[in-house]
Length: 108
Length: 118
Image (cartoon, rainbow over all chains, first blue to last red; front, side, top):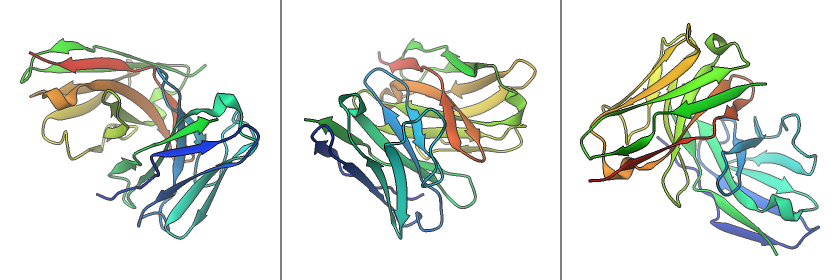
């Protein structure tokens, strides 16, 4: 197995840029995925394969990758973006999936 | 539209068994791998199991290996999770999610709650 590490919390004012990081030794070789989860709701995929955005996800959500760290960037944060965000990846053989511990994004 | 609906959750005593179901609609179910993911109260997401589109391969998280079994019936568009020897720490909301090779876990159900308590 392997681990993915996220900061527990990130705070940002409306209109500012939020950056949430996810670190793990497997990330240079494996894609990362990002999910948004609001209280009482199921997770929603917001970024796949490090940088791709699913249809219906606002353009202010973007992803990037550098070495052992991937980053979810939310530009022009809105109040509705307040949620928990989880990164996720899998091993190279597609036999084991892992989620990061999650980051609570607070919009001040 | 694509929809996944979990069922079968409830309150169960430690050591007992429970089977969860995930009914799929609006998609060619037999074309996709499927995951179970759980979330304990106030905690993060934990991957539980995956099954290949044709049921040929199944893999499990360390905490459930040997106790849980994932299966599917493509003729009924349904995914299952058989949970045996349940423990208090298995208490969680259980989600099923579709896996596409291109975009990962792109569709999730609303979850079903399992509570293991005496």
